[in-house]
Image (cartoon, rainbow, N blue to C red; front, side, top):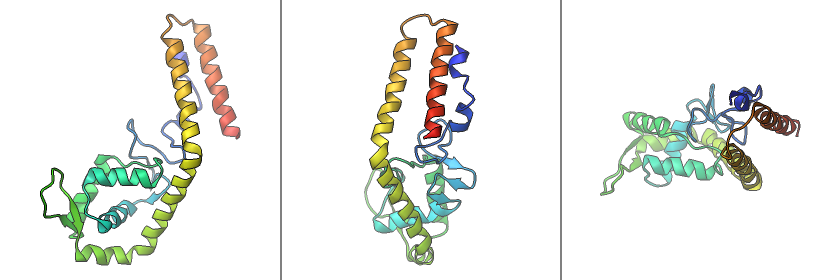
Length: 188
């Protein structure tokens, strides 16, 4: 069966999101790629993007993750392993503080020092939000159709491979069909 997964293109595309950003490890979020996180954030930008979202209203970590996913049309979803340490850093810097209130999750609110820092970084943060809005618009146009096609491919593979023994020739034919589809997509 190893022939099914032998694909010289796989190494180049594995972990790439629908908008070219690197998706990171085996989870849906993170999308870290070298010095860039996805297509939206340069190294260090996440701090001020989270701060801007908290300035809009007090938020907890999971809410911030969902909000970033929503604002990018699903193209970027940071992992908790990125968001929570960033929140700790913002708290240590005095830019946010836990909100006084009875909630099951720890809400953070911006501090006056955080507002000053955010104002200094305003143009950069606005540029990041503009890139995120562009990705969301693109996702609205292409995302559902591409996701449907990917799900169709996955379903076809699961159905075919669950029908019993697969010969080496069939595995080669499946791999060839996937490789040909990948090559055709790259030419588009």
